[in-house]
Image (tube, rainbow, N blue to C red):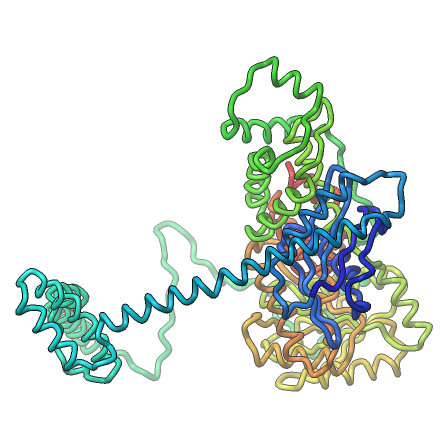
Amino acid sequence: MLEQLLIFTRGGLILWTCKELGNALKGSPIDTLIRSCLLEERSGAASYNYDAPGASYTLKWTFHNDLGLVFVAVYQRILHLLYVDELLAMVKHEFSQIYDPKRVEYFDFDETFRQLRKEAEARAEELKKVKPVGKSVNDGRKLVNKKGSGFDGGNKKNNSEANEGGNDDDGKGRKLENGHSYGNHNAAVVQGNRGMGLANGKENASSNNEAFDVTKLQKLKNKGGKKTSDTSVVSKGSKVDPKKKVTKKNRVWDDTPKDAKLDFTDHVEENVNENIEVMAADQGESMMDKEEIVSSDSEDDEDEVVSKDSKPDAKKKGWFSSMFQSIAGKANLEKADLEPALKALKDRLMTKNVAEEIAEKLCESVAASLEGKKLASFTRVSSTVQAAMEEALVRILTPRRSIDILRDVHAAKEQRKPYVVVFVGVNGVGKSTNLAKVAYWLLQHKVSVMMAACDTFRSGAVEQLRTHARRLQIPIFEKGYEKDPAVVAKEAIQEATRNGSDVVLVDTAGRMQDNEPLMRALSKLIYLNNPDLVLFVGEALVGNDAVDQLSKFNQKLADLSTSPNPRLIDGILLTKFDTIDDKVGAALSMVYISGSPVMFVGCGQSYTDLKKLNVKAIVKTLLK
């Protein structure tokens, strides 16, 4: 049974809802659909599933882009209603006939909807009646095939039928024998008679082709034997002393002086701390506090590129018809009109390192928002598609909530507790380095910071964080290696509470998204300490792997958590952003797949090389 059908404008004004359908919905499925699907450019999907306590709903929708209307149907997921799509199309057609932008109430549409629903349900019942007949016919065919193949009577019955067929006619007997030999072989395999041979010549030929050539194996053995014998002779003649270390000597070229050493690092003892350079707030202002200026160049050349890409697919039109269409405008945009421009945009996004799956979903969402819309005068399809894609990209990359960390830090300070940030991610993306950049930025805003060395797995991780703490002159909490990182983080937060530190930056070990033991340890750390912010540190160099990393991190954190409401990733820190030129698609892929904003961007190796994500610059680069 249909639970609810709702008609509202893109601005959020509810025009009509069916009062006869069911009881009140559990939870807020329509609000969730708008927030997480329609506003996030996922409207190209066929349906949306919503889980509430005690109910599971499926939502389907359609748009009338020319009038700016949204039609949403809600029903129980277990029912699998077949007539919902047809009903939505009928309601869309009938309601568009009576729609008036000045009207707010449509009570007269109740009777029309009642008739449309009866028609849709009657067609669905007819389909249900037709389907069992088809099943019975198929079942009858299966029974005939089973009787003809002779599986019911066993191998002896099959062989006797084959012999009888061979006595009647030679040609028929051969066909019957060939037809039954394959079935008998399969039955023999199922029953466990592995020793029976194959009667069909084709099967013997295929088995011979798949078999490994023994002569080749013997040749390989002979070659391997010769090589091993040669190596054994060399090893016997050399007589290397096992006690002596064999060191590789540098090649000495003629007329060149010998190098004294290749290691030019100054080895300092661990107890001597005076020789370590102190960098406390000496590198200038962090790039986080600087506004990036984006040049507003005209994008006419970009539109020309899109139109050039779309020209080969479309038929050539006369100059008069094209001029008249550009002046008068087209009645309604169809999917065939949008496909060339969308294909060119999809290829362009993929060249910018956007994951293929994300680029395809974006194009489907843009097509759904433009299909049926009237094209304005003096406007090309390519420019309309590009403007819609630009709006979609800005909407996706713009954070849905406040990401002002300094305000949250001061709010936690008023509650007399430290603000805890946990840095997570895969191996080698730069978690410790960018943690130090964030600490430097917080120090510039007069915030006291403490580091927690919870990477107790990787060798040198504690020493690396200790070096950053000495250079920035901030305290560090460490317990060495092979300790439980969740317990270390908890003790670090307790120490920060006693010392009055405002922020605790927790460094964790790098782990692949498929490593379940390490992911379980990370889930335990987050569940036990309940941090204020979980930052995923990811490289800007990755393409399709960004989708896999973020989705599996969120999935593992949800699956392995013992809490009914598990904590997921709250924000993203993109590293190595200065090495990608215009391949900025990883930012879009990560934000789209997780719904979390990019809060920091690492763009260098010094402490000041940390900045905010400039949404306008990213969108311009993606569509360039």
